[in-house]
Length: 98
Image 1 (spheres, rainbow, N blue to C red):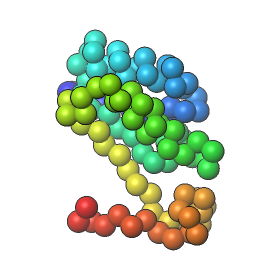
Image 2 (image 1 turned 30 degrees about the vertical axis):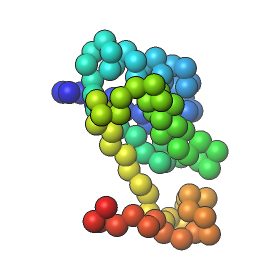
Image 3 (image 1 turned 180 degrees about the horizontal axis):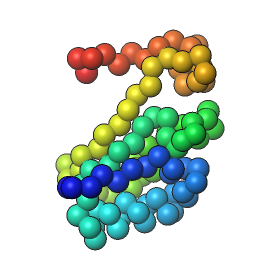
Image 4 (image 1 turned 90 degrees about the horizontal axis):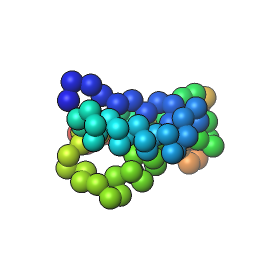
């Protein structure tokens, strides 16, 4: 689609119910097939909310075809400022080849 649905506020400023309604409207009513998310969303990131946007998208997809969507996500590397993201403080195991 020409537009991408961003999820940066889902799970903190935007409730799960509202986020699900946004996904439904974007996909079913407006033909959006591109969703952007991140393991750090919602922003600002915190240990309590990290991954909330991903979980909303996953829950919404439960009864849908994943093949109809392009989902971009981002993984974060180690940072001393977000040491709660990786157990023990180790860096991500994601590689360029993945």
